[in-house]
Structures are given as C-alpha cells and as structure tokens.
Length: 278
Ligand code: NDP
Image (cartoon, rainbow, N blue to C red; front, side, top):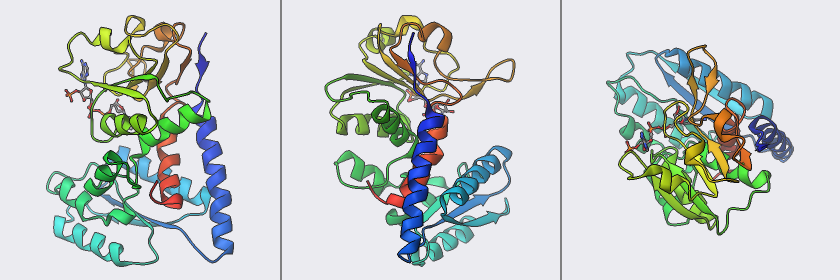
C-alpha cells in the first residue's frame, strides 16, 4: 500500500510557517501586500480569487482587490499594472487568468514587474529558472517540490518523468526537478510509446489534463506518483489524471485528488509573496 502524500497537511504547515514569518516582519515594521486583479466575473475565477484572499487574511498578508468589469480595456488594465509596479507598498501582483478574449494575456503578464511576479509566469521569471538564477517559480510545480521534500522523498539521481509540457506546470516542473538533480524526461502528446517512458520513472508527475489517464500499466512498481489533474467525474466527484484505485497499490507514495497537489498551489503563492524570488 502506498503512502498518501498529504497536501492538505503540508500546505497547512507552510501557511503556519508563513504566518509566523509575517507576524515577525510586522513587528519589525514591514507589511507584505498582494494586489489581486480579476477582470469579469467568471465563477471559477471568483472562487480562486476568494480562496487567495482568505489565505492572505489567514497569513496576515494585506490583499488589495481590483474587481474590474468584463468591458475593461487592455489599456485600462495595463495602466493599473503600471501604477502597481511603481507602488512601494505592493509586493506582489496577481492577475487572475483567464482574461476576457479582448485582452492579450501575454502582454499583461509581461507588463508585470518581474520583481512582483508572484505567479512566476513572466518571461524573466521563466528564464531565471531555466538558467538557475533566483526568480519567482510557478506555484503548482514549486508546491510539488515541497510535497516531495517534506515527505522525505529523495529527488537527486532519480528518474523523473513528467507527462505534460505546459508553461505553468510541465516545463517549470522539469526545470525544478533538474535543479534538484533528478534525471528528467518530459513526455507529451507526440511521445512515442508513452508507457515505456513512464515505466522508467522513480518519480512520475502527471499533468496531462485527462481524467484517470494514467493506469497501473504506466507505472513502475514502487514509483512515487504525483497527480496534478483536477476533474469532476460523472458523479460530480473530484478525480485526477491518475486512476488512483489501480495505481495506488503499485506506487510507494501517491498524491490523492482532492487533497494532494491542489492545496499546495495557493500555499506557494503565499510563499512567493512572503519570501520573494527563490
Ligand atoms: P495543458 O492542457 O496546458 O497541457 C496538457 C499537456 O498534456 C500538454 O503538454 C499535452 O501535450 C499533454 N498531453 C495531452 N494528451 C496527451 C497524451 N495522450 N499523451 C501524452 N501527453 C499528452 O494542461 P495543464 O498543464 O495546464 O494542466 C494539466 C492538468 O492539471 C489539468 O487537469 C489542470 O486542471 C490541472 N491543474 C491543476 C492545478 C492545481 O493547482 N492542482 C494547477 C494547474 C493545472 P502537447 O503539448 O503535445 O499538446
């Protein structure tokens, strides 16, 4: 039976540590603040933004909310970002994605000062990660590294396979595992004989965006399996990209969905706000 990697517990530990650090900083006269910008009222985005604000409140980070109407123009948004870039009392700027179709997301991400890019999506942050310089790191993959380290799972020298090469999960995950001295392979939709590749993995990270895609026959006996996917199944229950029931008996450790990778993303956003570039 696999050890369950408990993202709920680990994210709570991180938030407690951050809360203590923020209280100390406050005593020394430093306040941490995060600007959270939402354009339009997409219900899923509103839930994410609400959760981010709650986490800020818990930790003691001041959140400055910008709830902008759907019709906000690209220029109006860029002007707000420009103003926030120049404000010394704002440490981090987060623009909730996706943005309405009339706004160019890349342009908006690039407008954020890279020293306030707490989501880690700015090309400067991505570039810093790939050349091993300090920078903000995308929250979900940064959270996975914390899950592994805090579960005492060794990365150095291990065969690490990532299924998925998105800019926010797969690619930064590869860079982070490489930084931790893993031997890294990134698989994607054009990979030939995926099973042969995934079965080499000591650590298998799955970010494929397809419910229960990875079944036991993709997994080596004793592998550590990290499931990034989030889906609702036919019974409206959450499930991941990994078929948990078939994979769990074969794995040495595995993240559940919910309660695995999911809670780490916001915890690491808070971590980025408090600790700056890593
Ligand atoms: P994307 O859709 O951007 O990327 C999916 C990747 O999977 C692509 O690189 C694609 O390859 C690859 N892929 C698709 N089909 C196959 C296949 N048959 N075989 C091999 N590779 C394949 O997804 P994201 O990275 O944004 O997200 C992945 C999952 O993680 C989603 O379920 C998402 O909801 C979840 N997620 C969860 C987060 C959390 O906080 N827990 C945060 C972010 C995402 P190609 O590039 O060739 O098209």
